[in-house]
Image (cartoon, rainbow over all chains, first blue to last red; front, top):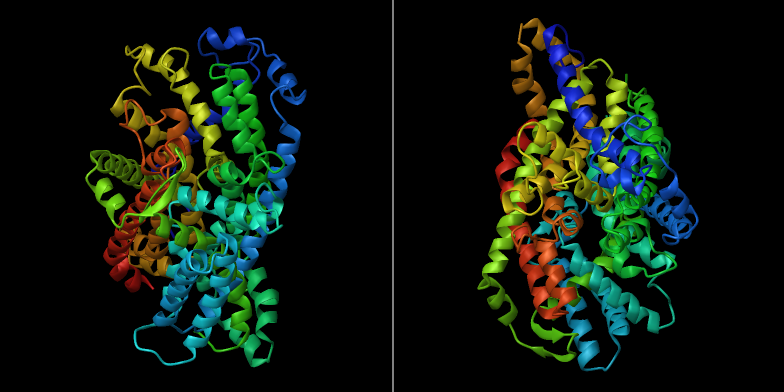
Length: 342
Length: 291
């Protein structure tokens, strides 16, 4: 079984390769860690690598950072954490449900009703805005509801054109992720501003940012979780169905615990995406719910050559994800054995 | 196996509603704007211009240059990520000594904010004070223009992309490798198949579906690259490292030319869709055979 272990000289070649890659992976992280403890003269004098040997470490950068001289790191950190964790939990939960439904149930949607949805949404929006004199937000909300109702109703009638199955629905979800985020972010900002005029504050708010992140994480969650669910043995579920266990209990009681490694991996990827995301945060927040990447990027334009302070700021954004990775990869390893089947 | 049960709608609708509500507006909004001449600075009222925005983009040499640059970065970095990632995943799966330490260490780059990575890369690639310059100087090549000459700058960006995203490939392929059944390998070992034959005959084909998914995700994501390029080179020297999203950013948020930017984003979407469809068409027979 060569896939589970290597022996002989191949083992040492594999180790050598891993060590090279390990050094390549860790050097930049080591570099940023030591640079945050350097003094201004220690940076300008050329590269140094070993604290206490090459250079004398100082805490200047960190003191400046925690004293708030370099921006509101505390509030930003809290905002980033809240948005990141809740958006990833929600996206993983909703996405796992949808992915499971797409793996185990049959869906039939007529392409025609999908086109009706898009046509009614687009036409209703233009009609509402230009002919009925509605604001952008009202026009959009009415058009959305009308489009949804019409397409659902039309799906009950047999129409010409192809019928879409599960794979097409998955493809549709994933294709949402292809849309260039730059225009999506700006258009979302305009939509949130319009909705704000109706009295619901979405720009620079918890709900607005979280919702945007959930929507833009769902495609990847569905894609990944679908593969994990499809790899699960169906026998356990069939046995439960024979015993008349309802579908929702099969999902929450049997399927979710069995796919724990997949769920953790997906949660981790989503959290990393949300935590590090730059464009949406740039447009949808300005002060209260600003996230760390925005603050860190601002450090660059303000002080380009002050490497010690930039490094400390970058570390504030980096370290929490590393701690989480260490904890979650431990969880994954223990769960990966899929005890239920073997 | 699939079955019918009304509960399936409860499972799928929450996700469907969120995606429809949050993504249909950007689509409709930018689709309608892409046919208009619409500027915020100086403020001009929207005026219907048909396909003008699209035509002027297609005739703009900068659009093609930017598309080529983005494709180059995306394809080269994803190819490297996949090759390195698969090798590392195999080594980890085969319990190379120190596997536990490697497993945690290898995942780290993926978790670092691209903005922070770019800031670190600027320090490392600094042509006078950076550690890479010192290393190259000992080899006899001091003060190389890592970020200020086109080919070096592209190389630097690709290196950073490979550094950051190979962990994603490792993570996914490792999860896939662990679901492979043992009995096939036992049978292969009885037949005296060499490790090389086992890899190309069993592992690689069986990993095809997950490989296809991973490469697809990375390719699409790589096409959207902006933060790294923005901080590292700002698209320079000139526009030689400018990517599609950065071009859209320059047009949309420096010049506030919304109609043009929306048309650009739809052309961007068309480029990506073509690449995606071609990719899936090429891979479909292999994925179907492995399943």
